[in-house]
Image (tube, rainbow, N blue to C red; front, top):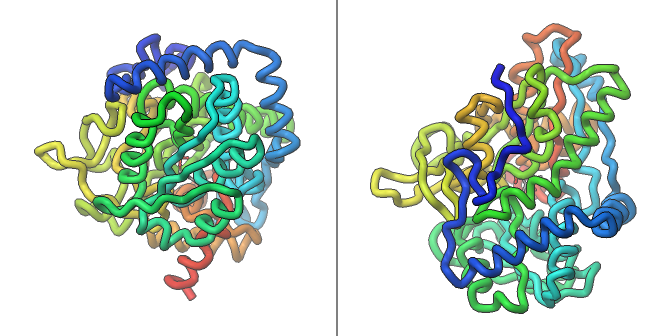
Length: 399
Ligand SMILES: *Cc1c(COP(=O)(O)O)cnc(C)c1O
């Protein structure tokens, strides 16, 4: 097993090995440098950390439980399965960890307006929630197709006082929403902070978003040791941009005995345009500020992507994941739409937990591997979000 020192990445220029960096218009360089400076000052400021941890506890509901999935373990008949319950957080997914952290940075920088992109709407809801809590104006860019499949989250954002701007360009999903948010930011950069929602985009975002989610893995480590007296054997998380996965894995990266697996969206199978598994047929490229693995054709044109879960439906993966894939510390697999939908059903029926379709990809992987493992093995899946937002869509397919 490779040994890695997670403290070494990103380097001072925002690179994870050959990945990452700052591929942005000149007008945004100053804002990104200001953000990095402010973040580094805040991270070292005990008053900032105290306020953040107070909000995470009292407003968001941390720590989240580590739950032993007894009936799923019994049904699969192999490894012991635990779930990290990020689905129980305020607003229903891990996204609020980052939204709350970044809004505190926006306030420190004296900004008055917040913008964000959203795919499934979870990041939009988390950002609108943070903006309401701190009294910021808030504009959320969302693909028109995503607005249709995630109507509940659109209504939630509106109730929270955000303006939701539909984006109809291209595939009208997350990539186009990010383009519009970047355009807004270039225009309004002096008053506006862009709360990017995954471990993606230009430096310093992949680092900042990861750091605000590291608490997921830190809690998990403490909880599993308190409960079983040892480290787990294997952690599993779904990977869209990669924020819940890197936050969950980070505290275990230096423990070579703990296997780490990221699960991408296999969509309808690994057929060009019908999936979003960047490590299955993807290539190195630059998209929306960062150099990383992505789905593009031979001319560098970004390919269409598909996943039943809007939150995994994106052509690029966060640069830190490309780095750990190269050095072998994290392995990557995929689950198809059908496998994720079956896992969605199974977890609901067997454990009384309706998972987000994104998280159902991680559960699908658990269902694949747990039966052949001995019963003294410990698997932990990150249940990144709850499935309320997906009930309508799943009912149309499954009921
Ligand atoms: C947004 C989202 C994801 C995917 O984003 P990552 O940055 O890869 O974590 C996964 N699960 C849920 C519940 C989400 O809302």
